[in-house]
Length: 229
Image (tube, rainbow, N blue to C red):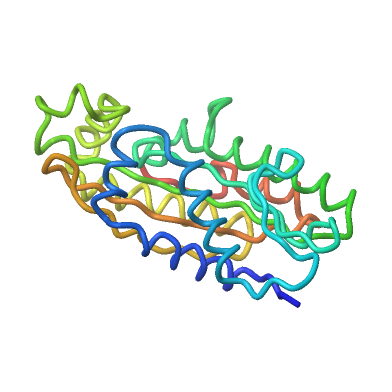
């Protein structure tokens, strides 16, 4: 019988993404939306590596949840995931304030997970985030046609002063945000280069405690955390 916990999920996600060639990862991140693809690699690795017994199984898109681990058709763990670029986490409005901000997206996922937890046999619930970026400053002219969200990558680097500073501030902000959601694990993803441009990415996963659901919303307010930008 499998036992699902935060460390196991983080280790499995790390293992799944390590198995992908860094050059392929760079291509995936630079050329389009990748959250579904990253989820698929993660879920396939869970399916392969977990010691599933009898009616235990891993599935995607179960009742509109990104990823589920089930036993006897009951969820024992539910996971939602989002993907954003470093420039999103760098900007305070996009991080916290706008209707489509990173936090509001996470909080809507958490509310959906809370409903499922109450509807079933109290499965553990988790929220994950991938941040990524492409250093378009090193090949700006040639990358305009091939890098998705080129303008946002370029603006982020210009605002922060460098690709390294943009990523450092974004990581710090995302660490604060995820730690406010609950117990969190974080690791860097080993991505390579795309047409000579360095690609970097990070992964976070947090376990959510429903009992503090609305405390989460308050704790991520601007008055509590001094997010950098």
